[in-house]
Image 1 (cartoon, one colour):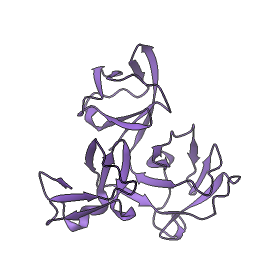
Image 2 (cartoon, rainbow, N blue to C red; image 1 turned 135 degrees about the vertical axis):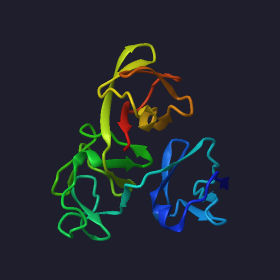
Image 3 (cartoon, one colour; image 1 turned 120 degrees about the vertical axis):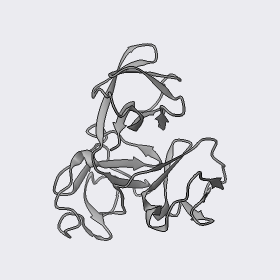
Image 4 (cartoon, rainbow, N blue to C red; image 1 turned 90 degrees about the vertical axis):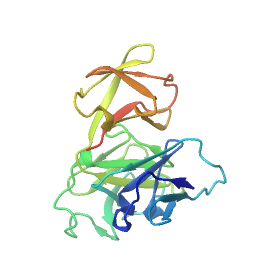
Length: 212
């Protein structure tokens, strides 16, 4: 149970994302509930392990996409994106899908756009490696995301491909299969295009996303 400094209204539950030990949690997936008039978040610990690091974010333009049309069979790589059981574009839910607006999480690990997957404006997603039937695939639509690569300059210092001067706190780094936040001291900015990680990147993809 986590107490919030300000209450979350009932209409905003789906806009809240909890990052627990680097893994995103969502209300629509029953990962947590909001109680005590919106002042408490109760996480569901399905593995019985209480997370050591919890970070709460609220984005007005976040939508959880809840299905793929075709079954994951370990060989298929391209799928049609559905929302509430119907084609996300043809249903009129969205006039089109900007590939930059789609975030993919596989088995709790955020995937890197163009490296691990690609998305077309006609709501098809293609994975670089075919997902197995047992893989837990989560798709999130968040308008205005800016995806960046990180190039090592020395030690734990990296150059970010899309410099940022005014909204640095909106930039999240993905390192060692976890979300990393400036506010938590996970990295610092030296200038508009240079960041330094507080811990060495040793596993998984390394990239950054700016959320609008």
